[in-house]
Image (cartoon, rainbow, N blue to C red; front, side, top):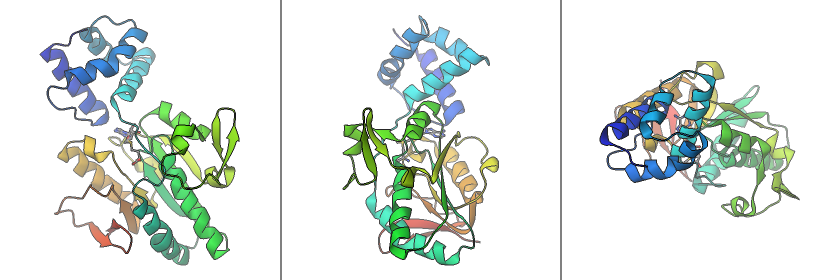
Length: 271
Ligand SMILES: C[S@@+](CC[C@H](N)C(=O)[O-])C[C@H]1O[C@@H](n2cnc3c(N)ncnc32)[C@H](O)[C@@H]1O
């Protein structure tokens, strides 16, 4: 099915508005490939028809919108991705937060995909807790725009292929018919909630550490700056932010100060 220049530009606009993603010019082949099965599933015969449904606010068009966003987002993730950041979390930040905290430490994995990032954080907490030999109350929130991927994350069951990406040991998993089930000693700290990073974070509370990795790259500078500003608001005073190792914050954003830790670079909320 062909897509005209006008349809393409309207679709770019829809994506930007609904989830912040910029697909750039001349990516018609990508849009056509990724949406082919969605168009079939919803019996849509042209991109104009798709766009007119995306404009409507109804249960079925909301389901269509979710499917379109799912098809256009990249869920690539794996265990201990950018592993030096998890070493920094385990060896530098968690001990500091353990000494400082009087109650619970809260960590947010924003755009967590199928759960490897928040569960990796929980593995770090588990290892740190074992090494200090005393209880340490850490709650981890995983959010993503996609309910479909969050439902996968909630099952905490991973295929052979997923399990073999980034894990040195399978000690936290037990084999089940559908794959490898993460043990509750790791999954119990993590809960999941649907959240679009374009929308307000006011309902989810404040965090000591936020991971927001490999998602801001898809947004315009303006959207990225707005999200970073609101992430800072969601951090406790002195809280920490991890972006992926190739991402940075704008130079003039004085509320986030880069920290060159022994293991990795991250950002601290100042002021
Ligand atoms: C490449 S994955 C990154 C997963 C994980 N943070 C990591 O670094 O391994 C990007 C995730 O961002 C999510 N995403 C894209 N746009 C979003 C938005 N506007 N709000 C929340 N999540 C979004 C996608 O659904 C996808 O799961």
